[in-house]
Image (cartoon, rainbow, N blue to C red):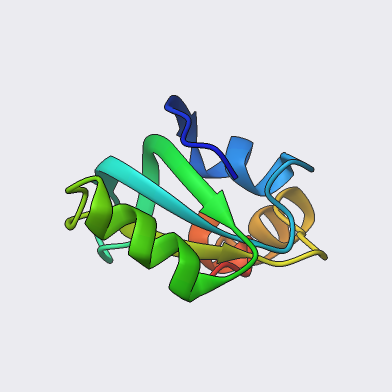
Length: 93
């Protein structure tokens, strides 16, 4: 995918159908107390991890956090029921 930059919260990222099934590179992250990203600038995404990493290296964005957004994202129900963080409830790696 083409490079993009948009600030998103973890919840917004998890809910976005544009990122389901993709590896997503986020920069300028804000982390929670367990060091999981909760907000950041979405800079790029791709189905292929290696392709995304190659583009990040080519553009000099070597300090991005890269996460995977699964196709079955359950943010609200699990987070509300278990009190887990958005990261854990979003099932992103």
